[in-house]
Length: 319
Ligand SMILES: [Zn+2]
Image 1 (cartoon, protein in one colour):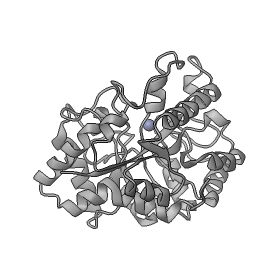
Image 2 (tube, helix red, strand yellow; image 1 turned 60 degrees about the vertical axis):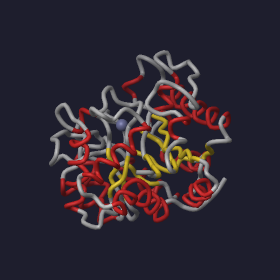
Image 3 (tube, helix red, strand yellow; image 1 turned 180 degrees about the vertical axis):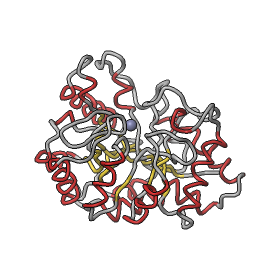
């Protein structure tokens, strides 16, 4: 099945930098989970590239320096490959790229340590091109607790959510604590997304969403993106285990309009058996089709639902 792929999360910027955070791997062609040559074989491609920071990286590198290097890596690699991809600042630009046969890169924030957890800096980050932000990663930080530490939003966390939504930046609840999740749901007035989170009913892991959490995301008009991390998918997972997550969410959301992709490629140690990287999205689509999912639902999950939530929530400012 020839599918367009909109993927809400990868850690390819970090992976390109390598162990010492100082290398310059090539986005065009590499041995990681994602490269542009493989992605170019898809029907279309929009990839969110995360700048990932956490205080837990401090022994290895300062989060501020990591943030600078990851952002510079994405910008430089896109600039070197403008024949294939460009940074998209709005859903309309993603569509224009798609029509022109080009891929889109969307800048996203995973963790807030790289800019001091400071809501006042979101406006500058928006101007650079960031369109999605989480409040943290696996740590307790000045904004919120995580799924590892527990603990809900602080006053500064609430200020952060309000400022992101004022700017038209999507708030991402992947990695947050359950308490933090519900604290955000209480104050949100925009769609909420979990860029890379699976179903906890299918596989019990604190990184996954309970049925109530997924339903709450649907009610905001948001989406949850399937995370291809083996550990969050199941025990010795394969393509069918992945399908189980999609079909479970589809039972809770029969319209199938709140399910998306957030592969977490280049950010995980192991992928499910049969899923090897960006080139495997069509293989998974074929398996979903074989399991009885209709083609329109697959196209919605792979592309249309992501575009829908971007259009509902992301302000249409361009550069
Ligand atoms: Zn993550």
